[in-house]
Image (cartoon, rainbow, N blue to C red):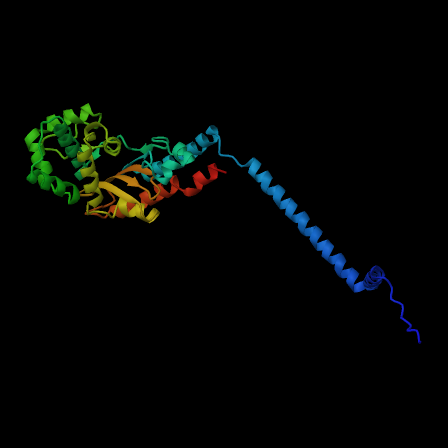
Length: 333
């Protein structure tokens, strides 16, 4: 019988080793492998540095201190006051600014830094604001305050005729209702009331044009905004604010506030008489921040509403300066 001869086969592990030796001898393979490891090492190194930088940044990020916030407040207030001094230098303009607390529950109210920086009155400033000027129809805010005071004391009852007259007095700046009120109660009674509230007095003198100051109008708007003083009666307060938002002469502060930020809401009372153009407003930004701005102007050959665009320009500048979002953002870094 013939014997079959079997060819020699090396063990499997020797085959694997021989293949590996061939790969190692292949310089293209070695080069590729080396490049792969270099790229991987570089990637891991860069990623490690990035992670470390992120951690370092997190470790050093913290809100501004109370001292730093106060410094920034002084800076903003200084710039605002400098601007006010500039625009009132010729004596034909009075201006007063007062920042209010934000609307409860608003984004601004929920921001701890915003609440701190814009704490009520922290940025308040003015120029020429204590100089008596022709009030024009802004005096109707005093008429409203007086009637609300009488109503709260049980001495005045709103009739449909009164409601209509009051509506037209605020929305259309009609004069009949306010003049009837002055005739009924007399200027002395109204001036005594104004003095009791620490508003400017005497505003009403028989036979003379009513006068007031930007500071006094700021005080009455502050009471209105905070539901204080003669505006404690919530229904009356809300009625007046609603009507002021509807008043039809909106090329002054309302136009300027909207130009600064769309969606801003303005409740204001204007006044125009001869060369006098005035506007007194409570302004609410979309994020809930609020402020009072009173601008009283005369001269410059103004007539009708020709001074209103100037008041709009002032408003835009003020709002952008004080309520620049970068301020709070910077303090939070």
